[in-house]
Amino acid sequence: MNTLNRKKLLASISFLRKNSGGFTLIELLVVIAIISVLSGVVLQSLTGARKKTNDAARKTQLLEVNKAITRYFTENGSYPSTGGAWLSSEQGDIIPYNADWVPNIVTAKLIPSLPKDPRGGASPDCTTGGWYRAYLYRSDGLHYKLLSHCSLEQDSYPAVNTQFYDPNRPTWALQLTDNYTATTVW
Image (cartoon, rainbow, N blue to C red; front, side, top):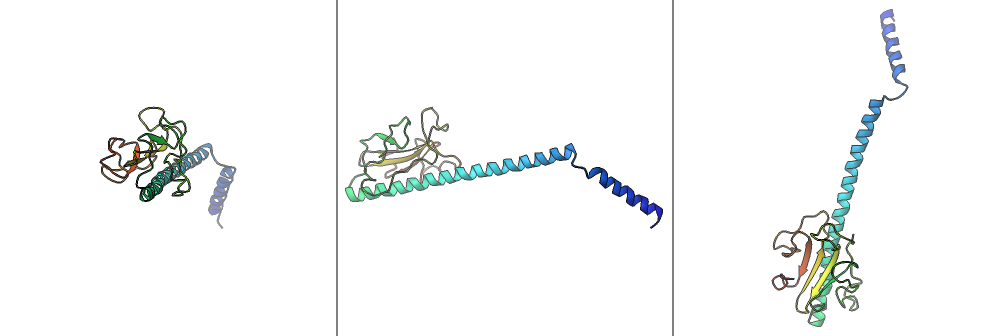
């Protein structure tokens, strides 16, 4: 090996030795910044997935309660009545709370238990304070309206005249009803 090549080899080895002691401050900051960005993206996608799961659960629970209400009507000739008043699934809501918020469908064994909103609690989503994320029910015996009120987290609200659309609460509730026209004013 000639002298020139040996000097180049020694120079490259000595260069490696100088930098083999650790990372520079800038390299560490770049790595920390990359990890921070990646963890933020992962956390955001997990939060979005949880919100979508809650919204899907709300729709599923409304449909299950709706089936029980329909079966109640088939067996009794009227819907479970609240005397025309609203009842809420959440204690502390502006609407009066009742554990049996759709009267008699649990005791009639049409549903094992009445669901509660996956998140529950006070809602920042409604226009005035005091509303809770809750299921609401109202019936005069002839018609009924069932709501998931102040609760959607991720999904957009239903389009006009589609399933779950509520003309009185188009941006903060999902509804199911036996008669869209008769319950529009509720």
